[in-house]
Length: 308
Image (tube, rainbow, N blue to C red; front, top):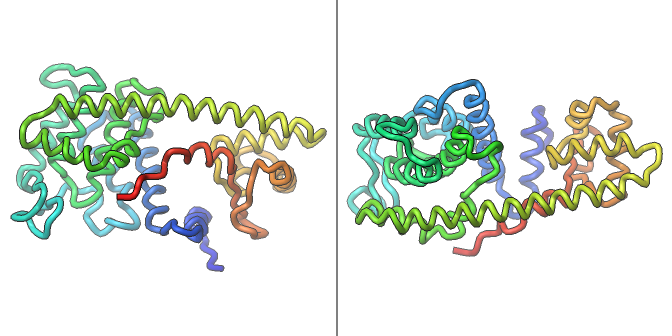
């Protein structure tokens, strides 16, 4: 087995050993989460949603893996296109490189309610189309354009936490999604796009509420199981709470999170394994990786995309 010095890189490597999960896909998800975290930290520090922030988020999102050689964090200086082998036969040709900065500047003003305020959901729907139409980066525009929706809703306090992700809904209906974007560009049919966007928000929000309730039910059931452990109950509950915050974790990170000794954490993990709550992913003596499998199973429901 290859062992990497960075536990996070090791975890990514081991997750890649699961059938059907390429390392590039795992790293892409990891980069996406890191980009979201970075953006939220900038918002907490008082930086408004801006071109600077978008470039920084893009730099984090594209720092490793696919697209890392496509000028992360920099607006493009050459023409790109979608579909086809060249602009002349492409499905869509975005803004010219020379006009990217001007167009993005106007988008930034719109995000800041200039020339006039726009309701936040409407603003998110319109800004997403404009961003995807400009396509300001050489790669990663789709991911960042979807992340822009969440960032905007958080900045405007429509969300207290980044709990609304429309990516899956867009991907599930990807062909219709692309058609709607093109229809806006070709015929100005904003109404159909706004209807679709509203449906995606309603569906995703409803699903998030249902998932939260299922996670709460699971937590209560598992706490009931743990309560029968006698003297080990208190420490095992602390490890369980830590796993609820980070359902894939190393034993070392759980020691740091809980403040419990390594020996006690390992005993607690043993109890959780025997109760069927936790599953070890690594089968190693050091830097063992554990999964709160029931939690992850609930979070994964409905994420399987239809073949296309």
